[in-house]
Length: 397
Image 1: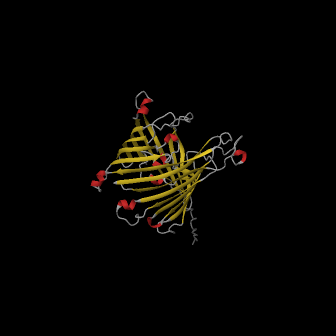
Image 2: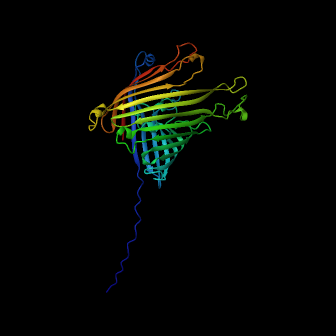
Image 3: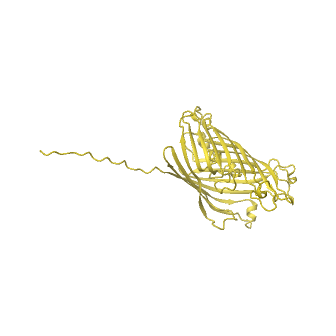
């Protein structure tokens, strides 16, 4: 009788699977027509108009080891600055977000809590938070539109998610100029935000449940124009250099509620800036001046048909917004004696959801100077009134 030896099959190595890539996108643009007299005067009494692709955000998310992940978001834009568009006047791609993050201490500060660290090009403290309440495809949030700081910057950040749905704490240390510029000086900017949602875990009312109050603070500096020194300069550093930075501080608070039937948002923000004049020489000394600007804005996105019947989804939304920006709350120039000039920004519009991924909006936007003194030969002229009618579109995928 023959002896049959059965050998065990060789163990097979587990199949290698590629990490999952989460890809999503957002693109928006408009057809717009200027209707103000200043724009018409530059075109023989006719209204300038154009089709525009405002932004294309392509976002890639991917695991990067245990508890790690990466995010990369592109920002497609068009260079519309006359001084620099000789190189290329079409649409271009740049990086907006590009960071690695590591999450730890899950549940250590209560149910749902965690601590996350990020490094790379990442969110600044408040703009991304507010864009969850405001339809960005119509216009930037007030803080970004008035130049408080960029929506993203290169540096490091920490995100503490509080337990029991109480909100989060977010802090950053970044270069300062924003993601659209290279680092221009040796200074770094620090910022912190506390997003508090006191009723998220307990309230049954949708508006209370979504209520957020987010105070924030941003402390920064920019380098002097005379940081390198030079012949004849009289600064305290080598070769007459000015080594101290110029103040660039901001702070504010955002409050909002978000529901399909009604979303509300409001901002109060202030900025303190130092500027310099002169040549930093004995004959023409360097003079530092400071100014304090203020922003107040509020907006509403409402679906009135869903007020009447909350169980039936409505594609129509009505939108309104008002910003008041005062570049200097205490002007010292004699030209502005007794006045506090500022700019009003107004938006009225209506949007319609064509389907779950595509939205159209017809809106009117106006920026108007307010409170400027009567024109004289010595006054700084304000930016003229600008009025524009838009047909906006947005697609997500």
